[in-house]
Image (cartoon, rainbow, N blue to C red; front, top):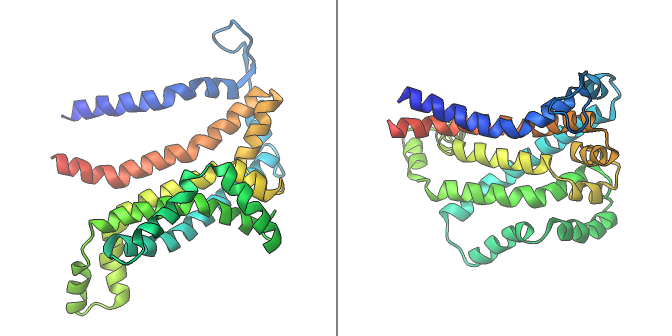
Length: 263
């Protein structure tokens, strides 16, 4: 059984990482011309361009992207967890309309959403600001968070909380020792969705940010058009690192329970 698991793990690892092998080669290449199978010479110019100077635009874009994604994720969880609880546990008039309203930003093309919000953000003074970009990211992150948490709470029983209160637990103790541990897998999935969605936003950031909010996707599109393949490949690898971290985190937090269930 262990050998089968190791083989399965290696197969998944190879299938996931193999497409990124050309990017890795490009990032360390100095000259690579067709029809050569491998680069003619190697170097660190692509990586030194990113980390060589403190004031590097790419490094600044990396920091901006991280703080944008982290802020969007935290706000999305703060709003999405109680909203998902209400939608998952309770029935109330207009519930279907509320669900439809939350899913509309996912159905409507992102360009239309960003263009529609741009005029309102200009009037509110939120265009070309950090918080304006966070708000437009929330229009995409929040629906996923709400629906993930709704599914989590649909299988959740509040009777565990009632039992804890009967035994003398305070509200804070119920929240920290009963509710959060039981819904933690849903929180992990919702946080990963929110972070990756915000991390990968290009059009909404470009439109609402007005070019002043420099993020990694914006820099990546610019580098891809410049023809500097070593630098573009290095930035691409940095761009996909959160996806690998999300994959490992989800496998660690969710896969262990699944394997125990198989046993």
